Length: 254
Image (cartoon, helix red, strand yellow):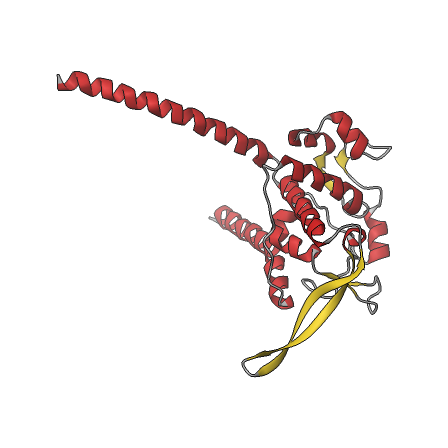
């Protein structure tokens, strides 16, 4: 009986841990008052995943690792090992190496107050829509130590990782009437231009989120393809089974 009780308690603790990991995205969205934008996730779009991998390596891996993902897994996305070496690897990395970073967690904690989280399964814990909205909600804030703030995550401790692409966006505050009362509506407005226009940046953020989703569940790409092939053969088999059924019933009727 005691053994059963201990197992039940352990199961409840595990469930609580899972729920607490999934809760921050909805809680933060509710506290910030920002409606989440739908992320254009499509794991069948290999080109988007390749672009997302390139952006992740060049703009995110300075601080964030992906320790449970190996570079050679990107061959599933249609990249050859030579392309991985040329476009995604740093000088000391190997194709079979995990996507680690040189910065130590202890140093990161000392410099930033908190070690940046590993990004391998971040899309599963924070949800794609939240990450997509977060990366589109940065604005310049000179009152912050790092010079950036975020509508979806007020007083965020992470600087804008894609600011070179988006540019120095500004906070826009407008007063609007709602039920006879003046309310402040905050949004992101253009500032100093970046390397991309608004449409290109939206696509880039979508590619990054798409890749983060892939890293969390890379098996989905292959399983979806296998599922389509299986359904195709089952549909062909159904035709033959139906014809066989007609043949059996023809003999029974006669």
